[in-house]
Structure formats: C-alpha cells, structure tokens
Image (cartoon, rainbow, N blue to C red; front, side, top):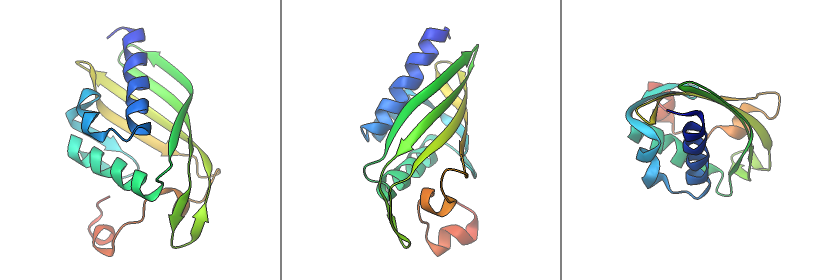
Length: 140
C-alpha cells in the first residue's frame, strides 16, 4: 500500500471514530485484527466493543492526529484525545497523548497497538469502567 494511501486510511479511521461511525470499522480493520490496547483482543467486533465502551464513557471524545509516520506497511501515530470523562471519581476533562501503531495488509489494519501516556492523566480516568465480571475474566 502506498504511503499516501496508508495515511488516508488512518485519517479516515480517526474521522470514523470522531463521528461515532463504528459500523464502518470494517473499512479500516481486518476481520481478525489483533489489538493490544492494553489487553489483547482479536476480531473486528472486539475492537468495535472496545471503542464503543470508550465513547460511552467519554461521550464528547475527540481524537486529533498530531504526528503520523508511515513506513511500508506500518504506521505510528501520536494523537491528542480530549473529552469529558464521567465516572465513579467524578467528572474530568483530560487531554492526553495516545500513541498508536498499525500493521496493514490488503488495505486494512491487521495488528494495532495503543498506548495512553500515563504521565498525562491517571489511567483510571482514561479506561472505560468495566463490570466486575469483565475484570475477573480478564476481558475488556
């Protein structure tokens, strides 16, 4: 995939998330995509559910690409995530750095690594709250 095509693909993915158009994720993520964010999940539906939980916890979330580097079938992005996090600890408006790496094959992401800079904000404010059942079985 050409560098410009990969750049366009990723920018469209971020736009899709910002517009809450999660029904279009199959244009960007492979059916068997592997995500490390921070827990490993496999599959498009798992990715959709993870993003949905985050967007539910931070309903006004917005991603802004600050840097994007593309090399062959890989990309690395530094994003700024903003929004109002509502949860057990009250309401917080963090602005945090998110680092993301993709491996792309056949025009879609097959592996995705996501890291949120812990120095920007406590992890408890960033991660969507999970049920006790989800925590106990290691999912989510």
